[in-house]
Structures are given as structure tokens and as C-alpha cells.
Amino acid sequence: MSEVIWGLATSHVPSIGAAMDRGMTADPVWAPLFEGYRPAREWLAEHTPDVAILVYNDHANGVDLDVVPTFAIGTAERYRVADEGFGRRPVPDVVGDPEFSFHLLQNLMDEGFDLTVFSELDVDHGFTVPLSVWTPEPGDAWPCPVIPIMVNVIRYPQPTAARCYALGQALGRAIAGYGGARTVGILGTGGMSHQLAGARAGFINPTFDHMFLDAIEKEPQKLAALSREDYIRQAGSEGIELIMWLVMRGAMNAEVRKVHSAYHVPASNTAAGLALFDNRTTRPS
Ligand code: DHB
Ligand code: FE
View (cartoon, rainbow, N blue to C red):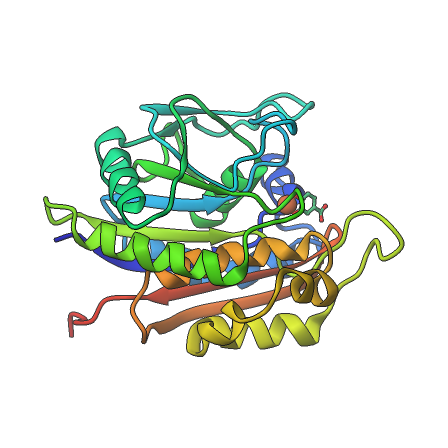
């Protein structure tokens, strides 16, 4: 049996990574956002898992836009940091865990989730910024191996929120069935409300975001029942990234303990949110 010990949901705005890479986190414009991360980072530094699973979307950096898998998993030994046009971020490449990846792949397939398989993959800001939110100073390596699970949120029609939640539930069963008593951290990334182009560019909806932050903890089924059009209408065309938080939540217990949450508007053009949940049924006293 292996166990999900925590779930971390976080936005992946590229400028959050750029602010860190350029030493700007104490600047007045950035300090409130990074202050909001602090309690979560402190807790996470004390709870390093054996392996992490990071649910994210590529933004046509690691994968060509002509081929966009609905759901995919990485099975590589290592994942390179993608060059998104400004050079690679100065952060470590990602060490994978092929054996655990293949276990998850096979179990998810057996449950009817036919994932695309990446045996080679460069990971973009959708992946590296959440890692930096978790671990601001990784040094030469991230704290543990990380397995990418990719979700299409960039080309219509995206998978439904309900399907993402069901994928998370199947993922939770697959994790539990992995021998070796591994501890697992799971990250759900993207969001919160934002729209980067079109007539509603700059759209942010704090009312929806606060509802979402509350419901992801207590009523994820309510969020799973929303249509993709609901997400786009209420959270913006890129706000639909939030469906990836439901994969994380589905892999966790029905009841979780919120460790910390934070909300900041805006980071670049986006409402930045963070939520950290403890998933351990028995907590050390
Ligand atoms: C921004 C947000 C995103 O989710 C993204 O992928 C790229 C840019 C932004 O707000 O700048
Ligand atoms: Fe994005």
C-alpha cells in the first residue's frame, strides 16, 4: 500500500517563476503573493514525500499544438525543462520514476482511462512554476522524483470536470495499490480565473474563485458537476485550467484537512490561488 499524504493546488503563472528566477520576490508588487505561500512552503518542507505526481497542462511548449492528448502520463527517467523562447528556467531538470509511472498507467488503463504515454517530454511553466511554489530553492535537485500527468485544457473540447474527478479517483486507487509503502504528494495546477486573449482578456472572477477554493476542500462533487462551458464562462477561457485541481482532489480522501490557502489578485493577468491539504487519516499527535 502506498499513501497520498498531501495535495497541493497552485496556479502556474509564468511570471511567478520569473519573479523568483530574477530575485524579485521581496519587491512590493510581489511580496504579498510570496508571503501568502510561506506557511504552505514551511509545512511542505517538513513533509517531503517519496514521490510526487504533478497534474498539469502543457502550453504548446513541450508538445506540438497539432497533437494534444486529452490525458497523458510521463514514463521517463528524466524530464527536461522546456525552453519557452527565453531560454530554460534556471531550475533543475525533473527526475522521474518509470516503475511507478508504468504501475499507474496500467491501473488507469484497466479502469478505462486510455492515457497517451510520453517516454520523452520537456516540461514547461505549467510544471516548473508549481514545483517552485512548493520548493523555492531546490539547489541541484527537486525534493523527490515527480511524475507528470498531463490534461488538455488548451484545445476545445477539454475533458469534463467530472471526467477529471473520476480520473483522480482512479489515480487514488492506483496509488493505494502500489507496493513498497511509498508516501505520495499530488499537485493539481493551473487557474484560478483568467482569460489571456479575446474580448474578455483580463477577466478575473473572485466570487467564483472563493467558491472554488472552499468547494475543492468540502464539496468537490459540486465542482465536478460544472460543464466546461460553465468554467469558461465563470473563470475565463484559461480559467478552465481549474479542472486539473479536481484530478488532485479525486485522488484524496473524502475528508481532508486544510493546512493553508492563499489568494492573490493579480499575478500577471491571473487570479493566483494556492490550497494545501493534509490527506493522512491518522496523524501523528
Ligand atoms: C498567464 C497565465 C497562464 O496560466 C499561462 O499559462 C500563461 C500566462 C498569465 O497570467 O500571464
Ligand atoms: Fe496556463
